[in-house]
Amino acid sequence: MFEITALLRQRFAALRSDAEFFSLRYVQQSQQYLSVRKNIAEPPFFSRDEGVMLTVRVKGVEAYAATADLSQAGLQQALARAETLARQIGALALLNLSDQAVASERRDYCSPSLEQPFPSLADCVDLLARESASVPDDSRLVNWQASLGVSNLEQIYLNTAGAELRQAQRFVYPGFSVTAFDGQDSQTRSLGRDNFGQQGGQDVIERCGLVNAGAKVADQALQLLLAPNTPSGARDLLLMPDQMMLQIHESIGHPLEMDRILGDERNYAGTSFVSASDFGTLQYGSKLLNVTFDPTLGEELASYSHDDDGTPASKQFLIRDGVLLRPLGGALSQFRSGLDGVANSRACGWNRAPIDRMANLNIEPGEQRLEQLIGGIEHGILMSTNRSWSIDDARNKFQFGCEWGQLIENGELKGVVKNPNYRGISARFWGNLSAVGDASTFEVLGTPNCGKGEPNQVVRVGHASPACVFSQIDVFGGDA
Image 1 (cartoon, rainbow, N blue to C red):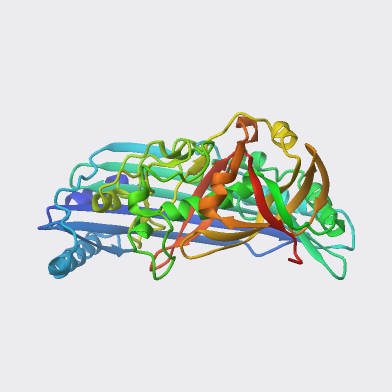
Image 2 (cartoon, one colour; image 1 turned 135 degrees about the horizontal axis):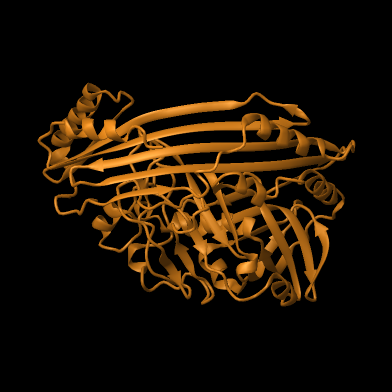
């Protein structure tokens, strides 16, 4: 790891600029994706990307330039381009960043289990083939796929204030899905859709349930095919962690991004129903709602020591006892708004500038076991595993669909129902949070494909949550 460090140090020290401050962010990322569909190995995908971003500050104005040319001349040319741009836009700048603090720490951060070798390509393909072959021979099972994605990231940040921040991370994305079809209806069941991802090694494969998944997932797909449609009406709703993940992402995460609140994303990703004046006063949800930005869970996808601007990351409450406290705003947004934020200024690669992004956004566990959550519901439905989502530009009105549903009557789980959907308004929905599961219901999940920004940036986002109950939610089936 970090073999290029000495070379980067040398070349960074040799750069020449009249800027009062400049930084270099080196990123190298390699990816592989393996898949076996219906017992046939599909072509593997491999990629490798490497480059640097140079950022300068000239008379309080920041600008940047990126290059894949890591030679001394290539770095100097990129730095010169950034400096020229900073001078050109100086007269039009809205902010003077001369007094904005810059990083000066030196620290390394590594994913858990990074020192342990990952299974070979042959071993990974063998695992996927075994799981694919374990799907029962049933004519109604028309499609199935076992997959495994792995991404390795190495990042080095240097600046003229003496900072040296190095991060080496490995992200693992196991997946399995089965589709059943009876000639009229089709139903798909999966291991969390595309939303099981963690940092780590072989331990991630073991935790996710991919081993011995084939027969179980296939059976659930057939159960859905035979199940009645989800009934419509107001019911208590028990959301499992793999659906809570999407609920957190869309109706808490995006609305709390400070650049969106300030209007930067309105022409692309939309705005927010939250305003800057809401922080410290808005009752975002019931008193059971406690939401944290938490980069300290090593296995979660967006755990890190510092963000891409060099700001140190620590656990912070965004919402405590239902009250909105602080936004998802990095150093620049904090400077602009005057509000305390978090270390979530992130970029998807070397050729993108960091912007406010969700990172690890979690709901803190409560005190009830799953059996207690179910036992407290007289007339409700359990839903898990997102399969569809729709939400307005202000991230307020939403409609989400799930793969799996089960009725709950008089405190007991009853039959499976298919096409479970629910809808609501964010500001009201979280106010209906009536019970929160304990640590035994808590799961660490995440998605590799959260998109935002112009030009678009796709980043990894972590979400961890217990199971949660919401009172009197509008649910409906596929015919509604």
